[in-house]
Amino acid sequence: MEWVNSTCKKNSKNSIDTPFRYQEIKPVDDANPPAEGRGLELYTPENIVQTVELLGKRALALFKKNPNATAAVLVRENRQGQFVADALRNPSKYGIKIELAKELAKNGIEIFEVGERERRAHVPEEILALLQFLARPHSPDYLKAALKVLVERQLISTQDLDTLAYFPEQFLYPTPLDPQPQSSPVLEARRICCDLLRARIELPIYHIIPYLAMMLKYNASELATADKLSEKVIKQCAGDTSLKNILSILNEIVDSERFEAVETENPETLYTSPGKLTIITMHKAKGLDWDWVFLPFLHENLIPGELRVWQKMQFIGNFTLAEVAREQIRTYLHGEDFPNIQEAWEKAKLLKIAEEYRLLYVAMTRAKSLLWMSAAKKAPKNWNNIKNLNELQEQVKPCPVFSELRRRFPGNFVDSKYAIAYDLN
Image 1 (cartoon, helix red, strand yellow):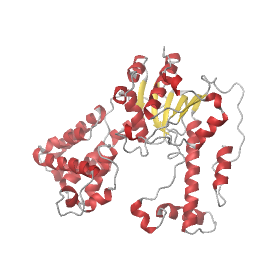
Image 2 (image 1 turned 90 degrees about the vertical axis):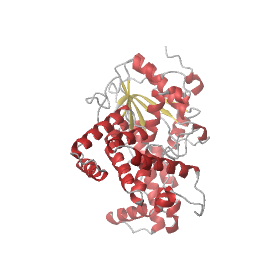
Image 3 (image 1 turned 180 degrees about the horizontal axis):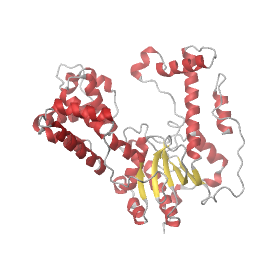
Image 4 (image 1 turned 180 degrees about the vertical axis):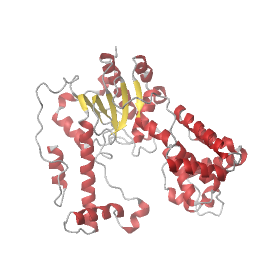
């Protein structure tokens, strides 16, 4: 905390509140549980796949020693949680030799991804967005909403959706007279959208929702939720199975927020239940704690990260209007001198860094006995699309806090080559 405060003050050109209040925290005798191993373990794996392998092996060894303990993997973004869960459940897909999920299950350990439950709750919204596109494919708003669903499901690459949706006809059915040929990501997005439109014509209307669920590559729980949704919609159609009526019923379901996702797991399970490896974002971890906490993917581009200015918005200047306005309102409410645009933008960047460090502090203090931290040497630039692991950036900078911890506590650094060969027995 002292290091973050001093670093932020040193990097600030203007006066700024420090991220943390100055305080001295001391251990309390006989109140803290004994540390597990070194208490703090720092790793620098070769890439994000090796990160999950190290994490899974360490968690497995710990649970074999104490099956009733609690453990969690805290990630900065939901995409990272999805990747960790998928790599643990399907290790061969990523070249991991040990069947981590089977080994954990053999010891009664459940892999519980919190974001998976939330995605099931969003099934009606995703289905509605695609059906609205099928009803009015010439609408820029509906096309953009459908493309956004495809990006979130990682079926197409992240790209400028506004440009694609601005001229729907030109995107869906380009001609030789168009100014320039479509790029590969655009062609892939167009192919999926055209497949959807063809399915609208060829499939019976009561098969549309199950087809969309399969096309979105839902898992078993999401497919069960989509099947329940389809049955509910068809039942309420009362003989009028037109797309217009289905959209009206779906709109009512989404607006009422009364549709409950199908739970294939025990609905009574909690995030901190013993014998379970919970994968959860740092934001949702506030107020919770576990015996062992794993913090993977600690890289500078995410923590503290930086405020980005999208290229399409740079015509107004090298700043984000929303952040500038938010900072100007904040200073006005606090009775401070009203900043100009550039001053407000610089202050907004510093406040963003401070907030990220506070979030990391929350994540680090969730651990009771062991804090496991890692920063891989190769990681994706953007977690929205990590289909091709061969395109990982090399020598990604670790989070400054991670680097400082490694400098101050060299004895807590664990060599990844040794750890990867760890004997689980």
